[in-house]
Image (tube, rainbow, N blue to C red; front, side, top):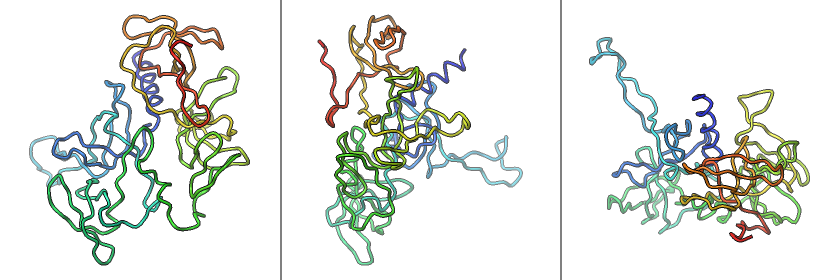
Length: 339
């Protein structure tokens, strides 16, 4: 029973934060005060077993020192072994790893706010001088000092805000024909570089989306997925974030879906206060999000939810619900409380 509960909790946490599934490349803001603001590259190992909004992460550039022997000395003459440092961090300290260098890259300029790679992490600074041979002087306010960097050690500073990069990569516009990247296209399209604006919104290769299922028993449910590339006219090859291929349990399921079954992944919304009776919600069940109505508020932050399509009633914990939103004309719309 405990093992089943752990698996269910892990699945729930992955669905609540699909960008941070196990193995996902991320950047971690250090919780250590003297390193606060530094971004360290790493990967997600697993959801926390104690906190629904935390993850166990492994750093790529930080190591944990451990002695090679069981005693206090190094009797065998062996050096202390090192392994990647791991710790649990809040989801608020995580963000996806930015696209690789060259994606939406432009020449750096005097006065640009940049991230500089130093001591295994990315530190925010400002370019104060352009030198020869593609080198720059960067000033760091945190230590009130200047250091010299090669262009390859710098990137334009960006913030991860509500599921989007600010400034966006596609807005910079890199010169070139962009033949190396496949475009994702559909009807009523407006092409621009590596992204495409359609009647349903902006879709890009690698974008996190939700896919609506029409399979028997799954009608109306939305599943998190990533766009792989264009498959055919008005068709996309996608990879699900939580559904596994039946013939290979180690790989995530890929399939071709129509544009009409896609929508951008909703912005993450943290609801602290209890849901009210008759509130429209999405409930996490069988790896997907199902639309329902809170029929009764129970003790212990639990709710009984009624599903109109199947006339089923089920109980859910607060962490298994999210506010219902509809994607209409390229915007997220929340239903009225009094509808």
